Length: 217
Image 1: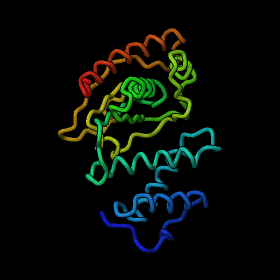
Image 2: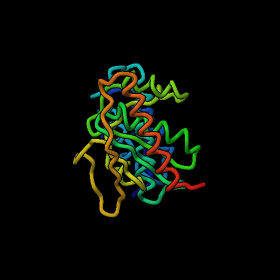
Image 3: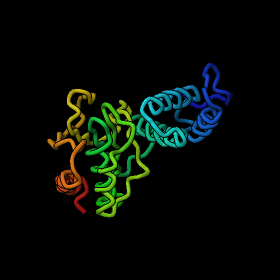
């Protein structure tokens, strides 16, 4: 992968908003020596377009785009051995990235205490995380209000050591040598608060088992 060009103007790329151009320039500096300015700019535009398609709240679109792009670029850098992987990488995937995968990510982050790094994505991401799911997690002291549904991309799949699928079927790209585990869990979409809490507790048990395997300490 080529290094950053001297020119910072991201030639050939048209940004619909000045804030996106500033973001691309900032990230080009952040990932200097790993990705070219054109690569960073393309990732910014692709990620912004993906967020724009599903997001209903436009006020934080640039902020969430920045988080999404950093996640993707870091994953790609890890795949290229250009960024460290100090702990196991786990990717949780469901259909909408609004329920099961978000609860799994929240629980793993809480229980792992930094011993595992977690990402989540959806094969057909929703516009927002389910309010019932947010409440169910809040009821056990885990705040996921800052999270948002993200589309499944090849870069995060390739960076993962383990890919946990939950109902996304054939939509998840399969790479030779990558470890996949399917958790057969009901979709909490449309469930009562009690039903969502039940699914959450099923996920908690599976997360605990996975964590014990990945990081026994």
